[in-house]
Amino acid sequence: MAGALVYFVLVAVLSSPTFGQSAPKPLAFEIADIHPSPPGRSLQSLILRGPFVAGGRFELQNATLLDMIRIAYSPTKANFDVLGRPVNQLDADKVVGGPSALDFNRFDVIAKAPPQTSLQNMKLMLQTLLATRFKLGIHNGSAPLSAYALTVGKNPLLKEAAGSEESGCRPSPPAVPGPGAMVSYSCRNISMAAFADALRYMSFVNFNNNRVVDQTGLKGSWNFDLKYSVPTPLSGTPPSDIVTLAAAVQKQLGLDLVLMKVPTPVLIVDRTNDEPTPNPPGLARALPPLPEEFEVADIKLTAPDFNLFPGGSIEVQPSGRVVIQHATLRLLITRAWGLTTIGSDPLLYGPKFIDTAHFDILAKAPMPGAPPDEPSNASNIPGPLPAFLLYPYTNADAINPMLRNLLIQRFGLTFHYDERPLPSMTLTSARPKLQKADPTRRTGCYSGTPATAGASPTSIFTCENITMAQFAANLPLYAAGRGINNVVEATGLEGAWDFTVTFAASTSNRGNPFGGADRTVEGVQDNDPSGMTFFEAMQKQLGLKLETTKRPGKVMVIDHLQEKPKEP
Image (tube, rainbow, N blue to C red):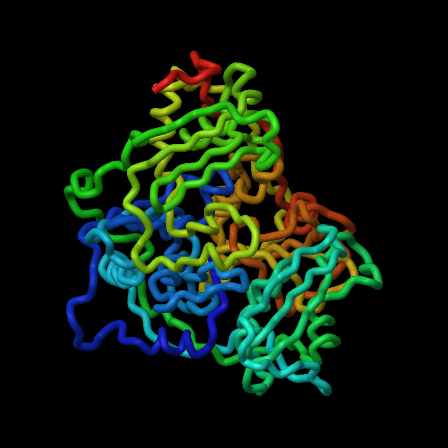
């Protein structure tokens, strides 16, 4: 959930008092549970989830220390992307320094505050929690960071706004979606600073995690239209009718986008512990479990003519209203017990109708609602969006205990767990081609594209200061598309390593295996990876091999389940 920040907003945030000054006692949670996140076995279990805020409950899942710092020191006033969605974190590159594991070790946080505590005060409480439990010391500074500068070309093609138009950029979806289709934005009464900020969030745009900053020097507000092509993933020279965003900005607006280093306000980590201090006693009493029963629930078979959400949808609103449409029993059980599907090997076995009968459920959950200062942005968003974008601070998994009891009581569900062979991989090394790690670098992996791009789309995957055990533990996130949820490390390589893999960019293997945004990788030239996948490139370029095998794993087996629900 990283977002671009307007320069003056970030300056205002970073110049506020933090440590070492006389001030009232800092806001703090009444009590907080911090513990290591469970080992990752799926995409969802290896990426940050939250912050979730409801009543006096604050929750983060799979959060690194860097994630927590970015949330705690995010802007006082929420920024919004071009669709009106809240952007509530600092960019990762605006936090520098700290130990190597700052962005690697993951924690779950559940904390308690007084009822109706605001989202902003929760962030201040998180600052206190980091200072007391992780001994975080931090100060303001400046660093040269990569950014795309929006500059004036030889002949700017902009029309000055009258000032009465609705401010912002409004998108028009492509008439024929897909690679090569045209994306259109109508921008009215918008400043160049706001336009630079909005560019990063436009559809099908990838700045490789770089900000866009306004260096046009143009004052006032402007009207203009912008049209560019949906990028094509095909290798080779793109078709001549493809209009890149950079070309559109240059030819249609008379502006240029130039990648350069820009002095940027940052937070500098002076010190922090890798692990928190122990949890206080009495957590079980202070943090009661989530409710386990819906207040009311209506279950109906989905109408035969239903043609939306073919895979089923589950929406949880801050008010506690739960809307489930076209859901199979497999979807409901998988969601309720936190299961997953490993390729063609399910972790849930039961009668055939768990995949054929579809249900609509309308329920009311006892939830305390959204924080009082949560941005109300749903009305600003054109078209339907999934619930996690409409209600970003609501933990939809809070209904899982209620859903479990609903399935047991209304469908008569009984089950047991069994061990069965499931897909796995073993990471081995015959002739390793790795470089000993630079111990000053942060432990982590990221993907990106070369600063100098060639004709064949290329992705670059880089890991720094990482052990083979750490690498193997996080590989399931990238191997998820191949039906693998477990990687066993058997390289025999000790210590930490730096390495880079270059492979063919495609819709199936592009993107960061570890959940972060892409970066522009300077000093690395684009090349022709000859269509190699990530796994093929890893073997050829690093001497590391992933061998597919089967290992025993836990599955859920249904003993009894009714096809039609009981009446309440």
